[in-house]
Image: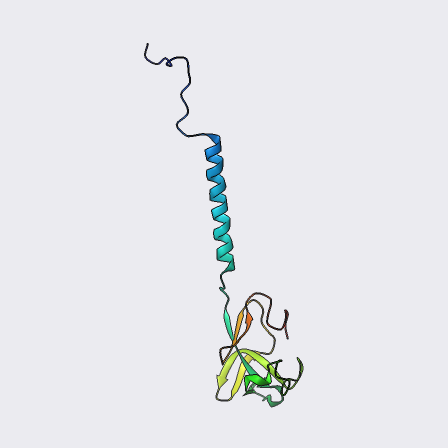
Length: 136
């Protein structure tokens, strides 16, 4: 046989493998990529904001409110709860000084995790909450 001529007239298989193997490999990489993206998206990586229950009737000129027990803002406690425009409301963020808090807001922030001083989570991030979506 002369150098450089194919043996027996048959073509050698390409060293890179078949198309089916390449398709399976690319599909597998795609599936793993989607699973990784889904896992990362599902992680709770939200900013955490504190919430204090305040008496809205205690507003002072410096913008602060008197902090009351969390039970006053809990809609499950019919003894104290006055509805969304009642005498007591959650106050988000802010700076606490003794029994008063100021420099925050009564508007519920979205896309954050809200936790009370007692450690109760009242919103888990995203747009939903224990009492439904939207602001209060």
